[in-house]
Image (cartoon, rainbow, N blue to C red; front, side, top):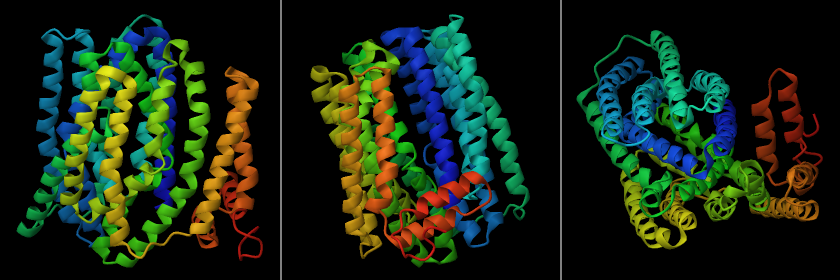
Length: 506
């Protein structure tokens, strides 16, 4: 899980940097209204892909992990190939639907046609990606997106500079998804070559898989409302495109901040499924609480620093026309304190097939989201959308966290290190805010605030000791490896252990 988490950090953080660069460039070239329109088209594309993929790729990832743990690779391969056929039909429907929107008058028409093609390719891409993650081939699952994402940045910037506008964005997407699909499919064939010949699943397994996929599909549709920017549908109806841009910038910033803490969560589900298949449930409990403790260490400093410096950084990067996104970001940062914990717990319940509970909580959260969006967005625009989204996420997520903790009882959290970690986070945020106040909201002030917060965290973390010694030594051992970067990380982690603990300072 640590290896997978490291690749997940890289696979989540670097694309987020790329998106940030493209977002800033788009804001400068397209302006608030143009960027708002591009964000809405992209949201519709994401929604179409989510509906078309439904619960099948995630079900394949989960069952592949379980079947490989149970040494039934042939059955896993058979389910994978069947899912390919299902998603090929779904991809065609998704692509045709979005292309039709362009042909029937949605503007810009060519952008809608291109986003339809890109969406169909994205649906197909989800299937080989699911096999790679189910087999815990984290490096292969990550490297494709990293390479194609890096290449997409200069290509998109060049097209914007040439005046291609919104259409240029989605032209690059078509190429990126086509290359990614070909590359990932080749990697998946390599995994399949090491598995036994495809086997037909037993009637009982087929029943479990289809039931799980059906519940997953319903859960995905509910999550579409709660965990994505579904509020854009109301914003598009009652507000200006500029408000869509403000909400999209703040939402993307919040999602980017959650990437690194959520890296542990993204590898939880297939890893837990494999342990379930192998019958090693005691390792599931130990790993869950260790993941929770690590997330409680990582997340608060990120949230505190973002709360003090985020609005100024948005205004600096995007320009004064987008300064309103700072207020939206503050609202969205509230759930971020527990969001990585919720995501990890959600993945664990998914692996344990507790989908009925997840679906019930999702339905309740959907009602909350839709009701608040209808009531608040007409009056408060993007800020109202943020309030609706934050309330829905907490409504769906806190019960999930409670059930996961109950299933892994007793609670195993070191409360004193946690308290010291929270005090450290407040100190980091306070120093960053004071620096920003002293130097102003320009480039020197923002950079100074970020550096001051990071420096304080590095200096005080070994003193505050926000992790119990057992977690420090476990993490240091898990990070052991060749190369100067790994050795530097190991030395930094070991400094968090108190003096005299075996292994500290080694």
